[in-house]
Image (cartoon, rainbow, N blue to C red; front, side, top):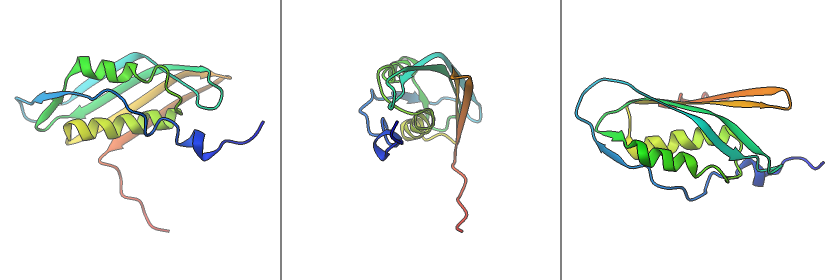
Length: 132
């Protein structure tokens, strides 16, 4: 079987997805936690379905995520070929772009495949990288 290419590695990152709508925040300094236990996507290499739970934890500033549009956004991944790591990081970037939170964490807990369970977590603000 040939190795993975940049095409698979970047799959899904530029896909057009429904917009995540927001509304004005009315309160300061609180945290929102959203879980989507029915997340599905497709492996870009094998075409097999992937299943898992996505959790989003964020501290809103001026805008709050509207849940119906967030659900439609998550459902758009259903037939999208994308790796777990790309799912979690893409969701984080799209959430940050939509509502500009003080902080956010996206966690993907993916169902076992081939005897392996994967958990991927991405945080905003992103830590600064050290230069080698």
